[in-house]
Image 1 (cartoon, rainbow, N blue to C red):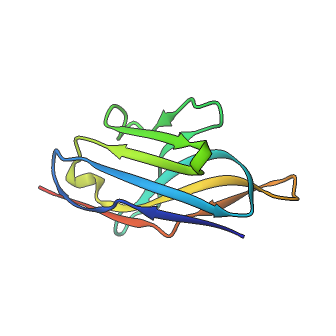
Image 2: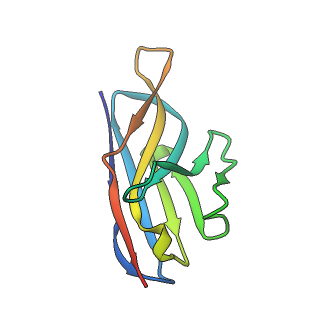
Length: 121
């Protein structure tokens, strides 16, 4: 019913930048909160950034000041701009969105498939 497709991952040197995109499609009535998570090898998935409908973003301490979450509601797309990347940012990055499907009143979370970000030292 709803698909989230991520793009923009890759290999970058420390200090570099990447911009991740996550496009939602399907029977979407509205998108509420959006967020990004990441999972490094051998570690649990961790929250990175979140943006409710009101646009007030919050960030994990580890990325604050370096990463910026944004959204384009007209395009049902969210972004994660990552600057000053560090090797410890290496992980698979996932987007998640709370979506209200057409004809339904509740919200359900949908996840992207993940995109690899590798930061070399």
